[in-house]
Image (cartoon, rainbow, N blue to C red; front, side):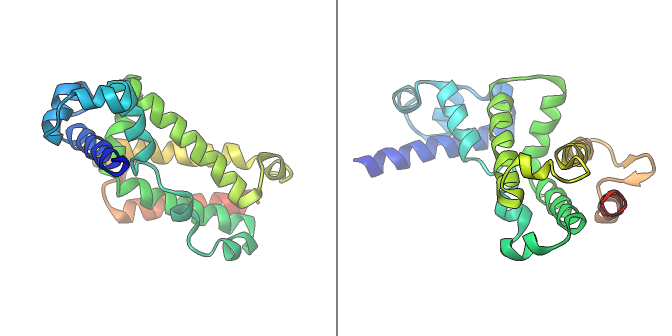
Length: 202
């Protein structure tokens, strides 16, 4: 019985993702999700207490943001032994690659620029938790990171915000300040500059 419930919940979460990707947040309703999942909409209320709960579950389960493992790689111990500038450079290269291969994330980042809705609010919490987990994995705490002469948290924020903005804009424009943000070559230029900034500062 518990297994049936888990499978049904997952069908509804997956259906919400498909509706979102195809039709956008404004069409993400109980009827549309139930239709997509071929299930009775009453199950959304029974298992998630309504659309809000389902959106929250989707935000928490969805593969929107690169995971800590994706950002740091499989060899965490090896990553931690590298110089700080190399750590940050590799972190940002992996973040750029992770964001660019998530088209739905790019759509959501674009939405965040013009409106705040229930989904973007939940995803913001997921993103902030990821950031905290990342700091704990690398530096164990923000206090330890604060021991460096460079404000690591601020630097990573600047780089990730620039990445989010340009990656989201790449869905609608090709060139930004002369750099083609739809092509790998343009992004290599950007990540190379991030690495050089890290090396110069640290």
